[in-house]
Length: 285
Image (cartoon, rainbow, N blue to C red; front, top):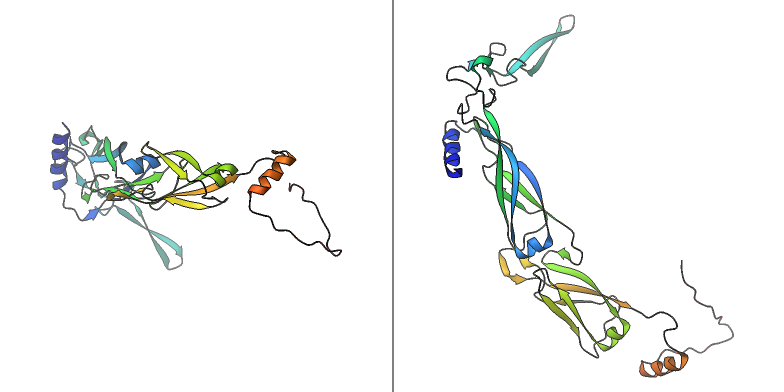
């Protein structure tokens, strides 16, 4: 089972003195704003190198590994190149005989499972727990779950959260931002507007009669923003920018316009003089 394999992996790893750490592996995980609001668990399938179980990471039979005679175990070759009279240049390169490992195994003695590579590829399923309030770009680290290699301590697998765009809300730290269209009558006389939250509740945004909402006004609802990371019962604000939709030209007859004008605050009148010139407004393309 999985537990037995993990114990076997630990035994295999314990045979090697760890002096260096292997490389970390970074994966991006695309998550929705709903996942970050409610919390979620996502399974991520990936391939990783593990020490070969058949040969216990030796690459072949016991005693089959020998020091590479070509590089004398260094893994590097040094060639002397003459570049002029009495002038030479040392060129260092990876030993082609042992591919830089400093040792070799004859083909007949190589492990059939890993073909002498000492490691095999294995599928790994990681359970990634996304906590409420986590942010775009936040990292989740699985320590020691990176690629295994004899003589190296396994690196980490690092999951970087990549938040997908949302059709309604934009996130800014712990706040959620949205825009809301209202009609002129609603801006002047009050309104009730339903909003579906990220946890699928419906809240009613209410402006009472007499509360004028101007075009471009920004208002907020407390405690309806994002949960705060590791304090999930506290939330930021829901910030709403209002866009007032005005009616089209000619929506009222002249007599009703006169009646409407009597109901609205008075407009500013000017005293025209002969020096003034009257101009008309036209639509701007």
